[in-house]
View 1 (cartoon, each protein chain N blue to C red):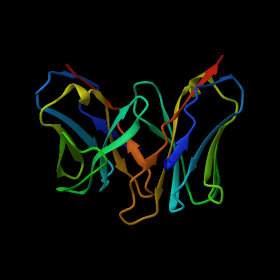
View 2 (view 1 turned 30 degrees about the vertical axis):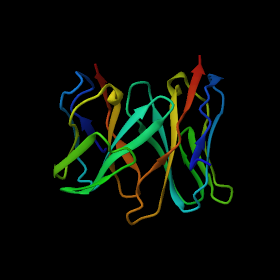
View 3 (view 1 turned 180 degrees about the horizontal axis):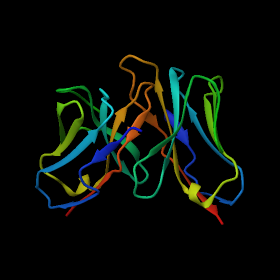
View 4 (view 1 turned 90 degrees about the vertical axis):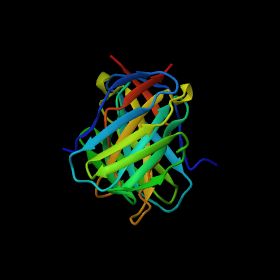
Length: 113
Length: 111
C-alpha cells in the first residue's frame, strides 16, 4: 500500500461547480497536512496548511482532515477557470527531524467556462 | 511572502556535462530541499539540507550532489549529466510548521 494515495483524475467540471479533491494515507503519525496548487510548468504553490484534525477555510477553499479515517479533502467552491491546475496533497510527521513531506501524485483539475 | 528563486527556468545540456542548479531563499529558513518531478512519478526527494554545510540523501541521490555554503543558497550538482536526468527540478525551503515553499522550477533537458 502506498503511503499517500491520490486519484490522478483528470477531473473536469463546469465553472461554478463545487470541487472535492481527496487523499488517503496509511501513516498514522502524519500530523501536518498541506494542499498545493501547481500550474503547468510552474512550481507548486502552497494553498492550505492544517495541523492534526479539523477544518480550515480560506476564501473559496476549505481543507478537511479526518485522522480517524486517514482521509483529507480540499473543497473548492464556485470554481473558476483559473483554478484549472494540478492539486497535490502533502503530509508529514510532527516536529524533530521528521519534516520530510510525503506527496500524493496530484489530481489534474480542469474548470470549463 | 516567502520567496524561493531558482537560477534558470530552462536549461539544455549535453550528456557528460557538469550541471549546476542554484536555489536561493529569502526567509532565513534552515531546511532546504531539492526534488525532481516526472510525469507519473510525482515529486521525488533528491537531497535536503538542515543547516549550512549539512546535507542528507533523499530517496534518489544517485548521480547528484549538493552544496550549502550559505544559509540562503542550496545548489544541486549533476556531476556528469545523463539523458535520464532530463526532468523538472524543484527547490523548496521549509517554514515553521513543516510546510514547504517551492521555487518556480528548472526544466532541464539533457541531450
